[in-house]
Amino acid sequence: MTGPVVVWLLACTGGEPELEPHFDAPDSAGTFTPVTTDGLIPGSTLDLPVQLWWPSLDTDRGSIAEYDGLLTGDARTQGDVSCEAGSLPVVVFSHGNTGIRWQSIFLTERLAAHGYVVVAPDHVFNTLTDIDDERRDEIAIRRPQDVDDAFEWALEQPEVADCVDPEAGYAIIGHSFGGYTSLAISGALVDVEGLAADCETGDDEFLCDVSPYADGPWWDGSDARAWASIPLTPVGRDEFGEGLAEVAVPTLVVGGDRDDVTSMDEQILPIWEGVPDAELATVRNAGHFSFSVMCDLTSAANGCEDDMLPVEQVHELTNELTLSFLGDVRGFDAGWPPESADVTYE
Image (cartoon, rainbow, N blue to C red):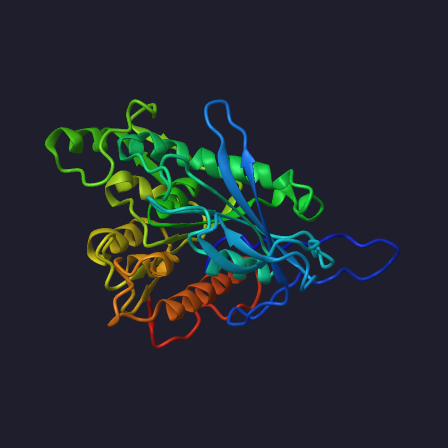
């Protein structure tokens, strides 16, 4: 794999040897207890609900986390952050269209258990509780700013502020529309003129005309602080087009071969082919919502069918793929790519 090697170390004083940064095997449960809290990012026009996770060595403080009263996780609600071996890497997670900030807690909690600080904003007017499809084009341009705001917010939180380095940046992970967001953050340019032309001919299927919210023929929502990108079952083929060639960070595209929302042929493969030097992992018998907790909320979603790979297995595979890829980018011997009979690679 090519790309920057990022290592988080704190300089030790008094002649003591430097501590090695923490790393757990990607297929393990992780050393730490994940702890979470929610908050609100104040904005000039709207406020963003946000969730924060961090690693702790406290095992039984507080209670088990309940997310908006709809889902119970494995994280605790209290616990001191652990960063004895150095400052912690940060991940920002972006949810899908009609998703929510905690829609993939199997992954965000596991990342915290492995020593990551994770932050996930609600993309307001595009969530499970406030969806407004008439604002989708506006939201598409606002989503990268939501990610930037969430990262800045996380840096200021007293629970983790002493354990994160603002200069180290963050990895971006997103599902579906969040996959689009991941690509935009990592450098993909939005084809503003192309979307407007598709809108006029009726060819566009997801976004229509972002031009009222984006300047120029190509719109750049990237953040130079991003050091890796993992779009899960992303949308973006028409939205980016040739602009995918501008992605400039190590990228892992993940898809399911039975996805009927962002299918392999119509979205996943063209996106992977358009991103320079991207990795592709295809999960066998996985659908679009296999990479979320949607099957815990309803069985009527692609990926929840009885003849598909059980979502618990897809979740574990996603965790291992993510931790192995990010570990590899950070310079560890992370076993990338992990071997599995249920995953193929390109």
